[in-house]
Amino acid sequence: MRIAVIDGQGGGMGKTIIEKLRKSIGEGIEILALGTNAFATANMVKAGANEGASGESAICYCCKTIKLDCIIGPIGIICPNSMLGEITPTMAECIFSTECRKYLIPVNKHGLYIPGVKDMQINDFIEEIVKEINSSKNT
Image (cartoon, rainbow, N blue to C red; front, side):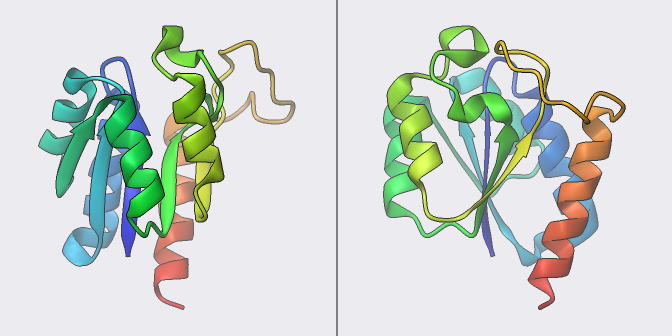
């Protein structure tokens, strides 16, 4: 199973996702850390990603050419100009158009409000995603 974790800014959410995936699933998956910047990518690689790449060109290349089973990241990865402009319209389009399952963590930022999710913490969403991936990996 090949999973891309996409994050920006400091890569803190991506780092947490990768750590929880490694703890739950171990080395049985390949994790590709795609950061909008080198700092985010470095933090995700330190957390246990197999490989990392940074920037618009790398993210679009990986989404278009690498067979991914899923993408995980904050909902902003499909919103043009989100994450303080780190997600370009081209990146959002490439990520959204990639033919794989996308696990999007709802964060009440980017001018988005998603009803029904305000009572959950980011760690709760990540745990739910890890459980889902673990169960789909075994089927």
